[in-house]
Image 1 (cartoon, one colour):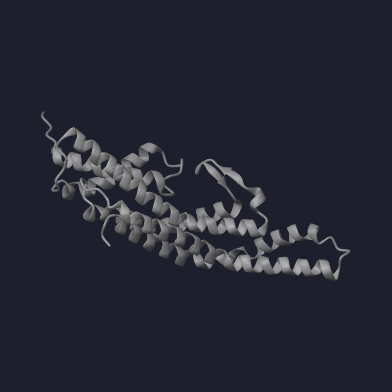
Image 2 (cartoon, helix red, strand yellow; image 1 turned 135 degrees about the vertical axis):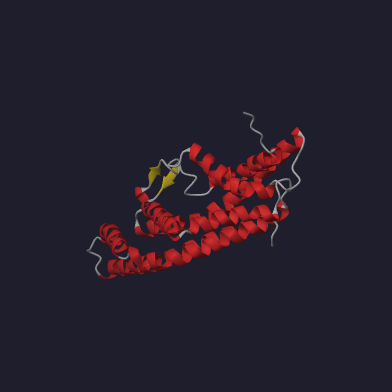
Amino acid sequence: MVLSVDGAALSALLLASVRVVAWLVVVPPFATRGIPTMAKVVLALGLSLAMAPTLAAQDLPGTTPGLVMATAAQALIGLGMGYVTMLLFSAIGAAGSLVDVFGGFALAAAWDPLAMNSNTVFGRFHQLLATALLVVSGGHLIVIGGLLSTFKYLPLTGMPDVSSWDGVLLTAFSMFFTVAVQMALPMIAVLFVADLALALLTKVAPQLNALSMMFPAKVGLTLLLLGLSFPMLPGALDRLVTYANEAMATMAGAG
C-alpha cells in the first residue's frame, strides 16, 4: 500500500502549527505546566489542520532557506501575539495582587509551581476565577478563533510589519493597568478609608496600640469585602477578549 501526502498541505500544516504552538506556549492557561507539552502540540496540530486546506493554496517556500525563514517568522508572530494576549489576561491577576498589597496579604506570597513564578493569595485566586469564567463562557474559543483568523491577513510566507507592534504593546500595557486598577479600585478605596480611620484613632486614643490593630483589622475587612471586585469580572473579561482579538488582528496587518 502506498500513501501519498500532499506536500503543500503538509508544509502549510507544519508552518501554521509553529505559529499556534508559539502562541500556546505564552498564553494562559495553556502556558502552565499543568498542560503537558505533547497536549499543546496535539492541540496546535488539530487547530492548524482546520486551516491547512486554505493555507495550501498560498505561495509556500520551496527551498530549505525559505522554509527556515518562514518557520522563524511564524514563531516570531506566535510569540508576539501570545505575549500581548497574555499581558491583557494578566490584568485580572494584577487586580487581585493590588488587593493583596493594600489588604496586607502580600506577605503571604507563595511560589506557584504551575506558572513558575511567585504569586500572592488573591492574585492567584482572581487568575483562577478568571480562567474558569473564560472557559465556561467560551471566551477561550473566541480568542483561539481570533488567532486562526490572523492567517487570512498574514500569510505563512509574509513578514509582519513590526513597526506597528510598538503601538499595540503600548495600548496593551495601558489596558493592563487600566483594567487592573478599575477592578481593584473599590477595595483600595475601602482599605484607604480604613487606614485613615485607624490613623485618626491614634490621635483620639493614643493609649491604644493602633499598629497592632491595623493589620488584623485590614485583613478582616479585606475578607469581608472581597466580593466587591467579583461583579466586574464578566465585563472585564469580555473587554479583554475583545482587546486581545483586536490586538492580534492589528499585529497581523488587518487594521
